[in-house]
Image 1: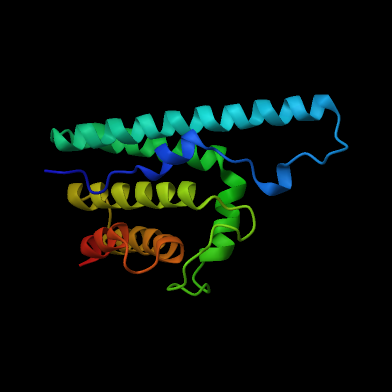
Image 2 (image 1 turned 180 degrees about the vertical axis):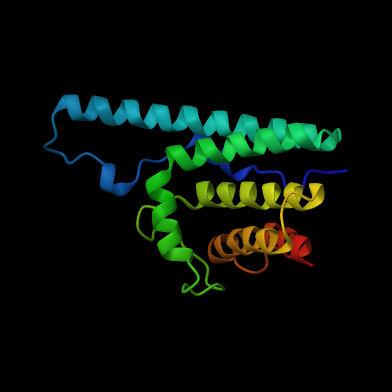
Length: 173
């Protein structure tokens, strides 16, 4: 058995973690501000790597049939992503909410949203939804809501022809 969906997007993003444009330092900024920004960038990268490690651990547990442990790892990874990238998630909700056009690709330059991190979060939502459905912990409506949220984000960023979109559609079907 393979994990519902392995998340490599955050791993790639962790190597090149970006600070949102709104947080960049103007040329006239002091060296203290530059040092703070560098520290924030390093912390963001460290957290992204930690979340990727938790996702990978979840995938390993899933492959071995330890679904409770997989759920714990996926949940901790998503919690870490949400806490760390909270403002990004708020912007994503604005971009990918129920009123957003679902089938449009995002070029990654809309606002300050890092598409790789959002796809990673969407993958976590998908994986948790899958495990909750499999274990009977979620109602069909709760499971469908998780899949639809994941699907909205993935379609907007990756388009309809993505394997990741296909995996989420498969989970829905």
